[in-house]
Image 1 (cartoon, protein in one colour):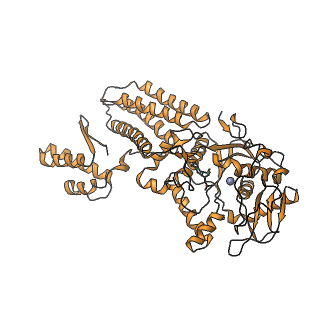
Image 2: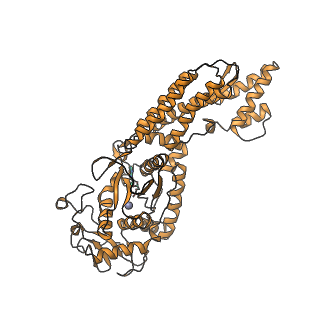
Image 3: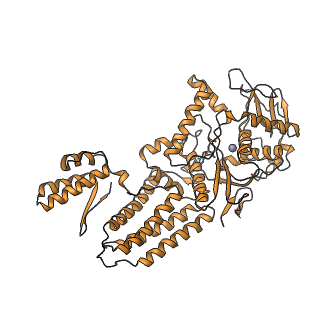
Length: 499
Ligand code: AMP
Ligand code: ZN
């Protein structure tokens, strides 16, 4: 049984989907006015991990994530750049999707854009006006917070102690405090200002407020109630409190059955944010770091805890990943060189049962509110056991079967967390310089670094058998110079890339 921490209830609860075998979830997407930073990425990676695990547990997951493509920030950016808001939104929507792909985040099942869902938003605002939960002032429409007796229940706030938060501005920069009946009320619909994107509505031309889009889209694509609503912890109030209030008052149904929020990524104990200027853009970080290493770093901290980012920690995560890759490539190599005539060198049964225990421990950890750090800990334990088991051994065919059982478990479970390692572990990192080296010494004519290494090793074996020590040494020196380690074993030369 999966248990998850529900923000509204402040505790872990058993998770039973509303529709058998299916999970419907909604995670708020980005406002597309610039590239996302690694703080935003942490939230998207956390929910990607949660979704992948639910799928691995056999649920069919419908994952909806909106794109906020109409907003003050987009309009301001367009004014700065001398282009239209639609152009800004399109550029950064494309960049966002590209960044998510680069980070290994799976596409949502549905990715609705706010500007394409205006009729559903108007319908919801209309229903709120009709039911007395919203009122119109000169083309603006406001939600009346005090009309919802449950306002504050998600974020655990008492309405009488609430401040109105930041002062909301109308699109013309004029304060709206005097237009609202109560400072706590918030805009559902904003009257148009000349030159800004606007749509016709029963209240005149205008555009939607931010919160209403998620209410309208989740209702349209998932139906109410749906299983899980997610986002970063900074969205609990006011965004999610407002979404919940609008949806429940407008539709007369529970909105989300469970609320899940991921912790903030921080730098020097301060939230990473655009406004503080302490941000690192995801695409820039991925220019020098592997996406798998970034994810390893993210998942080594529980998704609800704050995560302090530093490049040193990213390097450590990369080193941890390399240790796993080296263990897998050593194991793959030992299996490829297993022989029929070798005696069993391993306690195969133990390795089989350790792999099975690792799978169980993984599921237990992930069932407990998606405890990825504990799940990774179990995988690292199996990696250590595998290393010890195969060290300095020549494997028999039945040994190799036990080893493959362990390497399969390691690869599969890491993939569930979104850390996909290729079958040729480590080969992706081979330096490109190995290609001209193989062309020079081994007459290699291709462009693939892995094949180039194979060609060099063959050339070295041939040279040694012909006592051509000059060529054999040239291969060794060339590979060592590029960061490879060569070990001669009874089964031939074993090459690992040390970097
Ligand atoms: P925004 O475009 O600002 O609405 O943010 C998109 C997503 O990123 C939201 O789910 C936010 O909660 C999340 N987010 C923003 N800053 C951080 C941060 N420093 N750490 C984790 N998540 C964040
Ligand atoms: Zn939202």
